[in-house]
Length: 329
Ligand code: ASP
Image 1: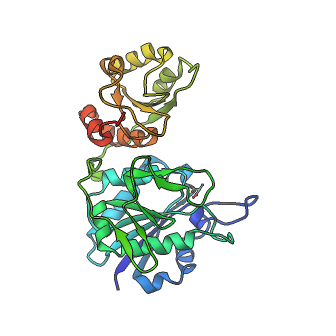
Image 2: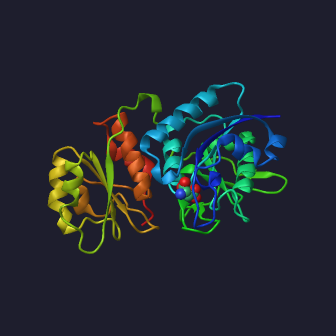
Image 3: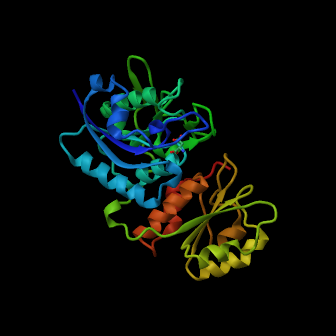
């Protein structure tokens, strides 16, 4: 039997209660594990509660805490794969951070649920069982961090939460496909391709994680927002802009001043498909801001936090080109 580790972090998969009394992160790791007896038929287990949170309250420091613990388990010859239970709300950020932070090694599988553990239609037990089966499949390791939900196996860098309430809320970003699926009798994982998005940043060399804020672009943006964020301590700003990521006039001079002071500004878009390309918005390029490529605003923020922590004076432009790819626009 393979030996797997279960790291529990909270979320609805460990939550209880009907909609009026719902609470995330209630069941502890041992209780969660015991609620799915079939897990014992797949592997021998090491169980651990690493933290116990509703994922809306996770901090960037939790990404490092997880990366550090997962790295240690990957280095342990007695462990063949790692399953992490997590809330769905910020799962895409944790999945992308771990994708950036962890070198390829043993399978690392995140899973979650949209219904609490005691709901009549709870999806957590099935997702946890399927995640365990994927973690016990060595071929999963070649893809880096993956997410298993509703029988889909999704690369960590491609994950989005696409619905606020449906059970199948966890999906692939537009333009990408799951790397495989969990069938009743077998796991179907396609061979790993070289993924340009993969860019490991060793977690152990990171300094203090800086504050990076996301500003949402809309008709009539408030001109003072960038300056307020900077005054509050932001070292980077990600703009979730309208359209193809062009900066509204009201923000331009303020952002120019902040960039001259060394604050990094990344242009992402609030539109789900198309991204912000490298060659468009020449005005904004000259102006010094960086295009996020296909990264969502929240992914761009994860990358900017980790990149600034790793090397505050590093070449952010090529990092974003590498991670964000060319926009198909
Ligand atoms: N609020 C919960 C969380 O993200 C939602 C979930 O797990 O689906 O922890």
